[in-house]
Image (cartoon, rainbow, N blue to C red; front, side, top):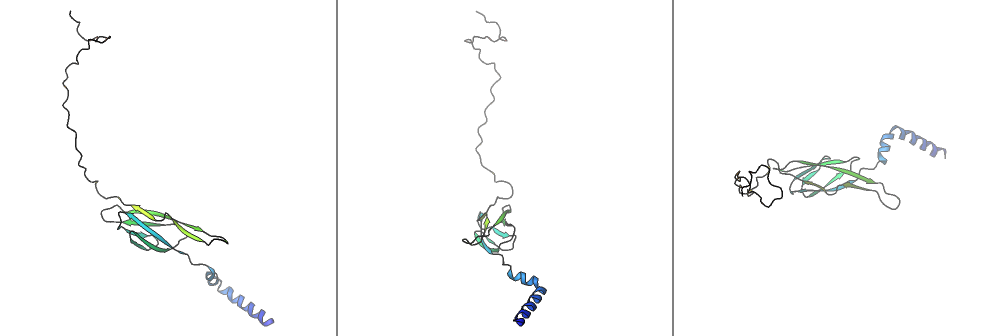
Amino acid sequence: MRRVLAIALAGASLGGCSSSSLSDYFKSTPPTIQVQLESQPSGADATTSLGPGCKTPCSVSVAAPDAGFSVAYSLAKYEPATVQVKVIRNPGDLTTPATTVTDPNPVFAELQLSGPPPKSHKMHPRSKRPKSAAAPAAATDSAFPDPNAPPATR
């Protein structure tokens, strides 16, 4: 029994020398998650700040970071766009497994055309001729005569 105890103590003291590697052994690797990338118009180059990228619509597999990440979209003749992505971890419990999801999912960007806006061919209304500056017709049926009008002759 003394030998078993001595070997156990020796093993524990050796484990103290390499405690960092021992604690690393028990750490779990971050889960990988599938991220769906989409854009309007499709065919844009989408690159995550974590490295992987593809042409939309597509899906990439990334190691779930502790914090969020971003996805940058680019396409010729369109303004580039960047979308921030949150990583949501649910630790689970005895009845449900732990999950890691992204928000938004799918990650979507609507790209805007670059440069000046396209010219529109609108029909211009015909210009109206200015009305002559002639005095308006005198209203004879008015209860209030025009004070600037010349006196009426009978």
